[in-house]
Length: 167
Image 1 (tube, rainbow, N blue to C red):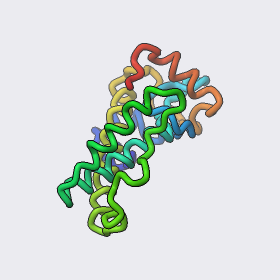
Image 2: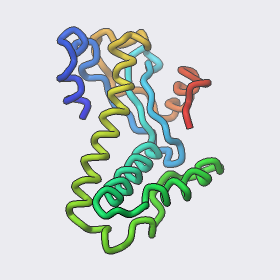
Image 3: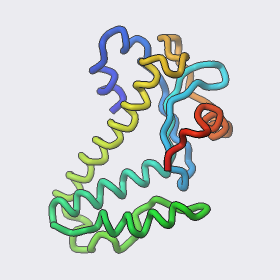
Image 4: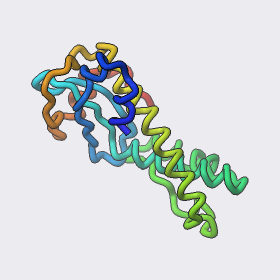
């Protein structure tokens, strides 16, 4: 998805952001994505496992609703939103939200995959934009490394925008 996003930029902007690593923080309870600079000043993109879980649940429920006229997205939201306000609240799809007769429907699975890709492309396209628009100040076409150490990723996120983390 990142390669496709980058290929649609102008050659000048492609040169600024080609090779920026995407790091996934394994925290299943945090729902977040951001662009930043690591300890050495190199650019990176980051997302959390919780973000991927949330996007998966949204894609699965929206696909189910669009194909079968159900209200699984609303059910997911009603269960998950209060849970996210709790410590260690997970955004993962709760079993039973999607009726079992629809779970393995190939059309639903294919549509959910398309929705997932669209949301991920939008999310990381937005984060990539912070780099090529020079909001981070560290994406200048330099050699890229593997991104920040996962142990300090959360510290970097807090330093970048402590007031801008969005629920």
